[in-house]
Image 1: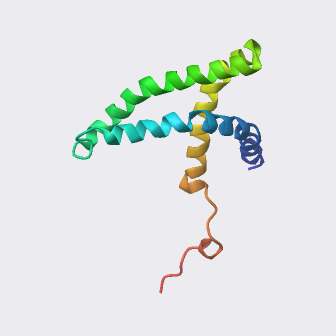
Image 2: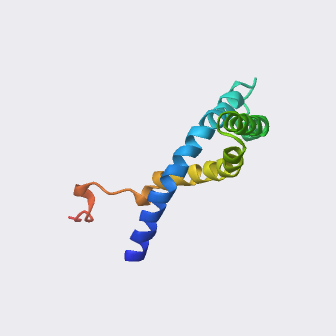
Amino acid sequence: MAFYTFKALVVVVLGFPLAVLGVAAWYVPYHLCGLLANRVPGAARERDQIALYKLAAGVVLFPFTYALEVLFILRFLGPSWAAAGAAALPIAGILSLRYLEHAECPHRRVRPAGRRFPRRIG
């Protein structure tokens, strides 16, 4: 039990800053993919094609956003920081997605106080 608590604490302490960086860096293209996919004519009728439209938008938006972010870092902080940013941004994006999925997982949520014990039958 102590190992899992320690592991969760390490994930929270070390993962949170990178997850925040990932959300800040990738929020706009992530949501733009969904918005653009839903704007395609006929997307409401052909719901099975939404994933294809999101993929097509992501193939363009994510590399473009990545290049803009690295160029921004290069311009204002220099080449050393740009190299670090180029390495950290993809990792931060993946970590932020995993971190948010971990936070949304229903079996990890704390139950309300009244629902700790099973209901009595009868």
